Image 1 (cartoon, rainbow, N blue to C red):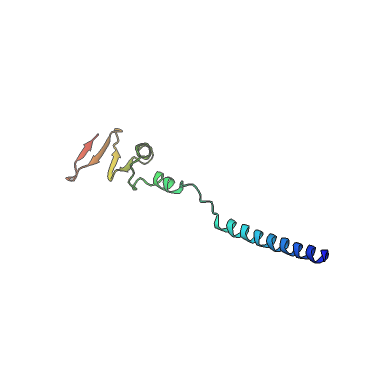
Image 2 (cartoon, helix red, strand yellow):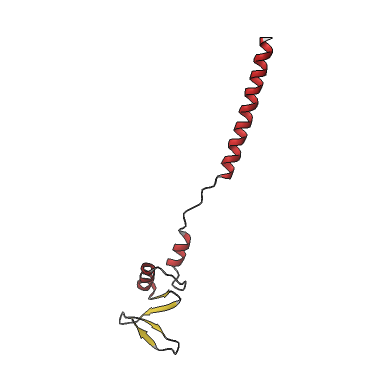
Length: 95
């Protein structure tokens, strides 16, 4: 009689252990670690034609490429190192 109870107890423990390990595998598959959101910022840093609202990035791109889009307006650096943009009429407006 005790042998049967021990056998049933062993089967129940084995059954619970099996399903517990399967549950952990499923939870591990659902958990994904996303990479930090750096690629878009790097893409903006190396492309002065993408508009940005980040003033520091805008200044960095002006130094590097001598042009940068800031809030939808393209700014340029002249040969005298003055910053300007072009008006709708095509005139240079210095900042």
